[in-house]
Length: 273
Image (cartoon, rainbow, N blue to C red; front, side, top):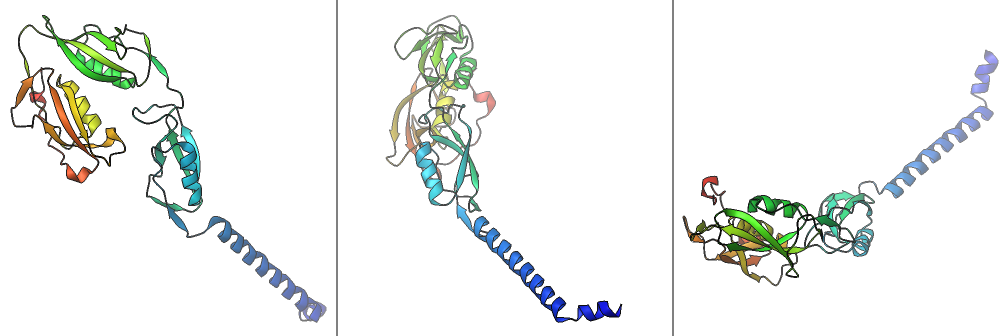
């Protein structure tokens, strides 16, 4: 026991303990320094807005601020966006994230898929519009045909002027004109208030009311037309205003959401029957 106590206070033991302690301190300090330098602890960056950019351009923008990426979806087609462009980013643009963070991207397909044209004959125009939208098809206008029935799709014509048969394959993003039964007498539709809606919402609303899109006056600063807002419309909206079915409505578009107000919801009983 006495020899053990003497050994604890010997120069040999003290030198060994001091060297071991110094080694532990150096290892821990080096580990902490390495973790700090590799993880950039406490350093954050803002996510750049890379939406609508082609993937190579988007990657360059991310790498410039020290962020990495992973493409998680490139199958869902978004109309109006170029093939291969970024459509969604998570975390979203301008979010503050840790340096080196991996962002998850969704891109538009590089080649557009084809889908069979939905069955449309003698179907309600609102039903056909929703089916066409699901496939990424565009309906440019409605043409009313005198008929005993009302609001039924009689035929569909593609952008080449050819009657589009049901179940025929068309590339998503294709454009069509719908011929719709308009009854045998003059009919009117309530004029919807489109001010404040996005351009895409306004187009869908016009179709729902059996109205057509007329001239579009676009602000020079608009980059994405579908995401722009309706600043004005003609004819102007007034309570209980009516226009003939199939009328064209002109729209003035702006990219500034603050310049347009969001109208109150239209009562369901004012929709065309």
